Amino acid sequence: EHLVITGGEPLLGWQQLYPTLLSNGRMGDLTNLTFETNGNNQQVLLNAWGQDAHFFYGRIIGNATWSANKPYVIIHSLEVDTNATLTIMPGCRIYMHADSKLYVAGTLKVMGTLGDSVIFRGDRLEQYFVDLPGNWLGIHFLKTSTDNQINYAVLNEATVAVQVDSLSNNSNPKLTIRNTIIKNALSAGVRGIDGDVLAENSLLFDIGENNIQIAYGGNYQFTHCTMANYGSVTTDHKTPVVYLSNALPISSTQYIFQPVNCTFTNCVIYGTLDNEFGTAMVHEADSTYTLQNCLLKTSYNHSASQFSNCLFNTDPRFVDVSKYNYHLKSNSPCINAGAVTTVTLDMDGNIRDAQPDLGCYEF
Image (cartoon, rainbow, N blue to C red):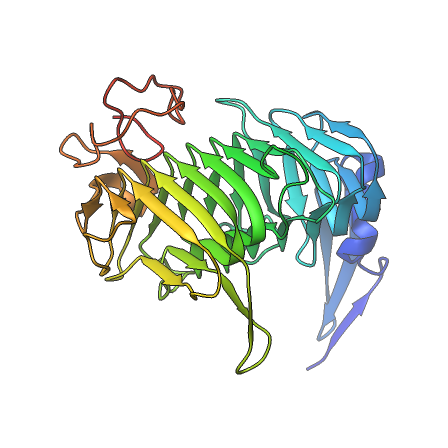
């Protein structure tokens, strides 16, 4: 028996196919193959379909505003230049190739709204890759970056979803995150290396290592954030939800130190481990961290001065973590357990009352 394939043109790889999709909006007849098996001929018509999009191949861009008229596909990374601002409007969809980061040397403003979020995810749309961690590298805020905002966004399938590796250049946080979901990251949800981050009303779950990974100093404020990890078919939960450190190893015996100043207010820090709040503080750095009105799972000394009005090792009673529903049940201990802050609405836009609830959702 033998098989002969004749006719048609060579199939296009994705690198050749994308520009064609861009120009045509869709791909119709890609090729026509004839199969000859033991003298019998069969013809197979191959079709490929795609969506028109904006494509970026390893570029540095200046001032730009992205609207939701078409998706954006980033291949071989994209950098927002120093002193430039990229504004991403509500409803935008950004698809990142596997080798790609969004580097920000200038300013990034993600301006999603309630009901019309901005979506970041990998560019592989097959069912196998849906919610698969590590489909792209993440968003990286560089030393020259300033006044960044991420509002009402969903960051899915990254390796490190957000990395901030320097302090702010002015009186504002280098990065402000509000009403944002970070999920299915391979390594970290938010990684700070002497960074500067303010986060409010945000949800982080199903992260491979740490939902919050403060690897080496910096200033951080987390208010009304839900940070949970129960593991999944793609993430093996073995490390704490939150990790804080003021020391960075430079050899097997030497460290460099940078102070940590970190506050958690009205947050939920919970998962399947006995201790979901890990620290590696070294006395050489003058570091402080406090948790006020938080629910957390930890084996630390509950009477330590860092904890104020906290609930320990108590199930927060989310509605259904198997369906990624981190709203509170009616019998949740998080209800009315918070302190009054400047955050007056929850992530769903509901008013927080005089006794606010813990986490990103008000019951």
